[in-house]
Length: 419
Image 1: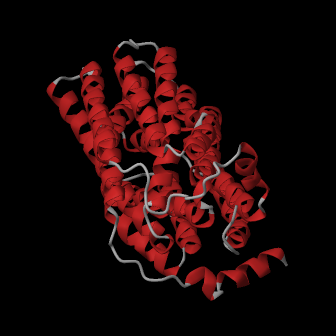
Image 2: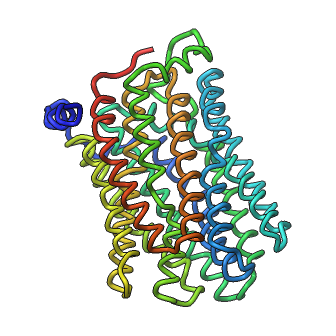
C-alpha cells in the first residue's frame, strides 16, 4: 500500500510540472564553475593516474584499491557538516570554501613527497579529500543562493558541466605528461598543484561572497536549528534516499579497473576512460538540468540511477568489446549528469536560505559515507568472489535501493522546509 500510494504521487502535477528553465545563469555561478573547472583539472590529474600507479606500479590488490578509493570518496564526510554550519553561522561561505581549496592545493604538493608507499599515498589522499569536504557545502550553497529556486537544477547543471570540462582536461594533461615522460608521476603532481593554485586565485578575486538570495535575518543560525533539519521528515526522507542510492553505486575508478581487466587494454590508455566519461557528463549536464527544472527533479534523478544497470550489465558480459566499453562510458556519464547536480538542487530548493550550507553539508556527508561503504564493500567482494559476482551483487542492491528511494523521494517533495 505504501508503494502504491507513492507511485500515484509521482503522477501529481506538483512533482512533475515546473517552470521551463532558461539558460540565464548568474555570473557568480559561472565564476564558481571556472574555479571548479581549474580545481578539477588538478584533482582528476591525480585521480586518473592513482589507480594506474597503485595497481600497475605498486601492485596494490583490488581490496587495497577499494580502501584508498573509499578514503578518496569518503574522507570528505569528516568535515562537511562542520564546514557547512560554519559557513551559515559566520555567513562566510566564500572564505570557508577558500580554506578547502587551499588545503587541497597543499595536499597536491604533499603527493610529490609521498614516495612509493601505499600507506603514505592513502594518507595524503585523505588529507586532500578533507579539503574537498570543507569546500563543497559552502560552494554549493553559493550556487544555490545565487540562483532562483525555479532554475536550481539548470544552475547546478551549468556548474557541473564546467566542472566536468575540468574532469575531461585533467586526464588529458596527465596522459600527455606520462606520454612525454613515462612513469614521471611526480611531474603530474607538480602540474596538478599549479592548477589548484590558479583555481584558488579565481575564487578569491572574482566570486561574490554574499549572493542575492543570502539570508537577511540578523540572527545567525544556531547549532540547534541546523540539527533540527534532520528532525524534519521531508529532509530526513531525502537523506535516507541519498544514502541507500550511494551505497549501491560503484565508483568510477573501480569500474574502470574492471573494464581494463576484462578488455586488457594498455594501462597507458586508462586515463582516457575518464576523458570519455567527462565529455558525456559535460554534454548532458546542462540539458538534463533544464529537463529536471521542467518536468521534475525526482524522475530525472531516478532515471540517472537506472543508467547504472547498463554500466553493471556491461561488466557482466562474458566477452567485452569496444562497443560495450563505449556504451558503458556513455551510461556512466549520463548517470553523473542526472544525479550529481540534481540531488543538490533537490536539497537547495527545500532548505531555508540561512541553513543552505548546513543542509547541503549533511546531504554530501551522507553521500560521502555511502560512497565509502560502497567502495570498501565492492573491493572486498571483488577480492573474495571475483569481479562478475561482485557486480551482480551490486546490481541487486541497486534494484533494492531504487525501490526504497522512490517513496522516500516523493515524500521529501511535499513542501519546502522553513526554519
